[in-house]
Amino acid sequence: MTIAIAIPVHAQEGSVRATQVDARVIGEGLIQVTLLGVGGGPHAGERGKDALGINYSTLVEIEDVAFLFDAGRGAAEQIASIGKANFQKVDKLYLTHLHSDHNIGLPDLWATAARTRLRTAPMQVFGPTGTKEMAEHIEAAFEYSFRYSARPSAPLALIGKDIQQGVVYQQGGITVTAFDVDHTPPANPDMHDQFPALGFRVDYNDRSVVISGDTRFSENLIKHSEGVDVLIHEVTESENAGHHTTRVEAAQVFNRVAPKLAVYSHILHGIEQQLTRDTREAEYTGALLVGKDMDVITIGDEVTIMRAGDTPNGG
Ligand SMILES: [Zn+2]
Image 1: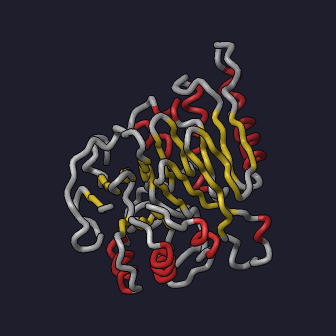
Image 2: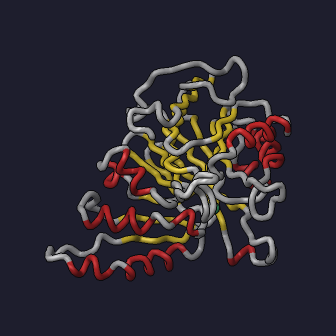
């Protein structure tokens, strides 16, 4: 397998080549990953700019099935930008945890699509303990909107379900596995159970992608990432890990997992060069992509990257 990249990114010498594909056509047997948003934390946004920016959301599409992992700020806007038909398609949301930069886009995604009938089926949201209760509160908060409508349409339910580590979806040759990561508050290391956090792995047709969610260095993530093609990992700009992963630690994770492509998402825009430099200094030499909003990664015989701006609808 080679890594084909639309424009030179920070991949290994020799593994970079230009490619022209229609990013939105999902080929048979492929996994297509769209980084809808890569901004991490409640601040997110561009460093030194006023705009808040788009938060962390990752769309994984396999033929006509779509899985959305987290719905941070702007998730609905980003989905609309790749085509409103996707509101119908995206009916399964997996939350890594319940921090606002991961779920603040959920009410928008759910209510807007339901009220405009762009989605005509209930939306299911799966996540760690607390997800079911959160979904009930969101439904209650938007009760006015649905009751107001002259149409006798019941609200299209938001169905929340608490999940644990293990296989959480298995159908049509697609397996989604949740696994525990560690995002326990640094000040309260004994509160792990009160603040559960998950990572996810998607397997299909001998191809695979892992999404870390928010975590400090995690041996369990390394274990569940064995043999994965694409590893999408969070990183902190800070030198100290706290409840996130430093660049030095991320380089260790990438070296131990040795994915075909390592990707940073959940980052602060404007630190891309610094992330690359520090990860290289920490001696990770494999293919590395510092994600941008709307980057598209296609996993097939090759791993292909369409950088945002190169895609027909990117931006
Ligand atoms: Zn976060």
